[in-house]
Length: 219
Image (spheres, rainbow, N blue to C red):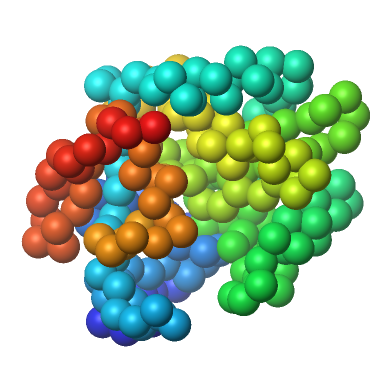
């Protein structure tokens, strides 16, 4: 990481979260950070914070197919709990990576993830009684932010990572939120480009301004 800022805190209010997200900040656990240039194995990458303006959001046809394909799955939304099933799913999720393999789910969440440093809820997806996907959503005053998502590689054809994002968006809309923050991508092509395939996307220019993302409607 280069050209960035960070701080640590164990508590941030919902209104403060809205302000932080609107200025390009994110967090893992109690570590808050923002950076505009990243040095990767592929070279220099320019960081692109993203958000969705929820009042203008609509599903693409491919996203509608993902929702239909997974109608048989059960969804539970509740305060985040890291139980044995979650830890097992995380270990299975790690198998997808060949580099930058995360050590622990607590690399992304605090030891008290439902309340520290802010309110966080999980979107848990079950096939019968089997936990097959879970994502973790921070709740601000008028915005939400996706922290991390995991899914079972056996279910890769179901696009569960996109499904949990769509479920997070729907939940945020039901709360009456203005914005949903899916995290960083890069201006350059990368494996984060799936985040760019949503309607009503905006990007942050690091000067305090948000702009519509061209071609953000592709899906």
